[in-house]
Amino acid sequence: MAKERNPLPPPPPPPSMPLGSDSLGTVAILPTAADIQSACSSQSSNICTIQEVEDLKTLIRLFPLWSTSIYLNIATTVQINLTILQSLAMDRSLGPSFKVPAASFQVFSYISMGICVPLIDRFFYPFSRLLVRRPLTLLHRIGVGHVLVIIGLAAMACVEARRLQVMYQRGLAVAGDHLDAFVPMSALWLVLPLAILGASSAFYLPDQVNLYYQEFPASLKNVGTSMCLLATRMGYYLRTTVVHAVYV
Image (cartoon, rainbow, N blue to C red; front, top):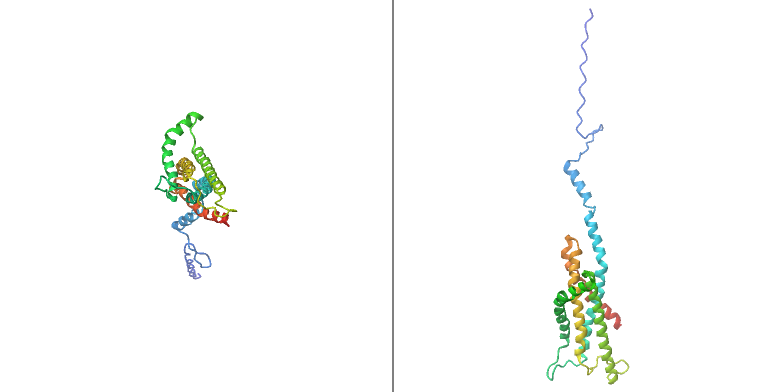
């Protein structure tokens, strides 16, 4: 009987491949849960939310109103300088021994504003509600203030035209020279235009702040309350450019 051959030993098992390896022996780094979450957060940070888009639409909608207030502030700030120059060339006497300082004439505008604010709130708005059968919106109130600014500046221009007329009639200026010569005309003529400008500020300044505070998004409420001051400061800066362009 033939002797049985010993069976061949079984082949060794193939080496275990590590997780994430390929047949060539290269190892791939598998992302962890933290890596996936970090990648998702970085992508989502570049995408605007619906609320952010709506906030941007609100800012764009309020920009025309805010930009028009800049032009308004340019005119009013130029008027402040011209009031001082006008009063210096006019009779500022109050009585035999007292002269009103030229820079103090702007106080009449502030006094008018302080008087008109409670009168407007207590009398004008209730009367207008009865007259038009509905309350005035904030935009209506701001519009009334802008109209009063135009009237006040027109009144200031009429006073200046009268001053120049008196100056030419008395022969105080020749061929347009010495336009700042002293004119025997009372500087109290400036009080009425300044009072109108103060009343206009009582209309549009508080309501403009109120409008910005109501319409601005919740995350920008503090910015909204400062927009009026920003428009005023830009008016002061641009006033220099306007005055320089006129004189040149």
